[in-house]
Length: 208
Length: 116
Image 1 (tube, rainbow over the protein chains, first blue to last red):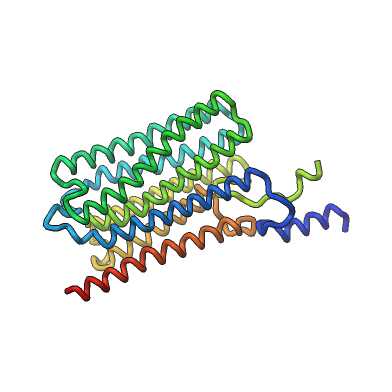
Image 2: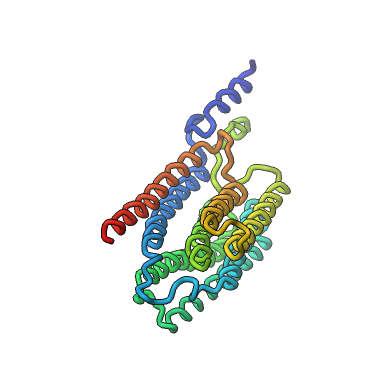
């Protein structure tokens, strides 16, 4: 065997198991951020558990089937799904150093995320004005905490996106900007995964 | 540079090393599957297509399927050996999530039953 073959064989043996020398910064950064996302999901699991426990306790107040508008929820879901798609295409453009394309996809992602947030906030405002605010019942406390926390994450993601776009415009698609973009897109995809849980547990099971 | 060709390709979630066309294709396939599963969830919850007492189970199955689609097509977490670290972290996270949610529901349901 040539030295190159031996090298390839040993490298093959240690792939993904921490062997073969220190991993590139990009891998380390993304792995660390992946751990953060998983711990964020663990935090959400506490809120999901609280909602699941409290969802029957309406204290004589309105129930989910009286409050939820599934047409709006469907539009919200589509906004998030398509924003995940444009976020992915934007990440691809950034990898290929196509700055203009990246900016277009970033704007699309922002608009879709903002549309989601607008629908959610008007839903919350409508519920509060009907007297179904977070203090009305255990069910509504759990609802506003869980769905509101997801909404707060989306808001944070949008602010972060604006900040990333500013960095791309000022600094260009340099390696460290690309690493931050990678973290941002992981965050955005993870929000979509959490929304699937909210959609299923809160809206579809609650309205059925 | 020979050094750069060494297999330093532990994979990160969110990154695809395939051809660029396969990339766009992967996102598009993921989007199509996710939309199909979302529509299926809404249909199942709003009709009697499934046996009514089984609807929550059906919804949970559809939700897990869609989470799987997101992990594979959007976060690019596959089963390859280069993804071992990411998958192990995910498995641990899922274990904690499972313990917190089922544990809470189980304990509180038990307390409720005892309070009746």
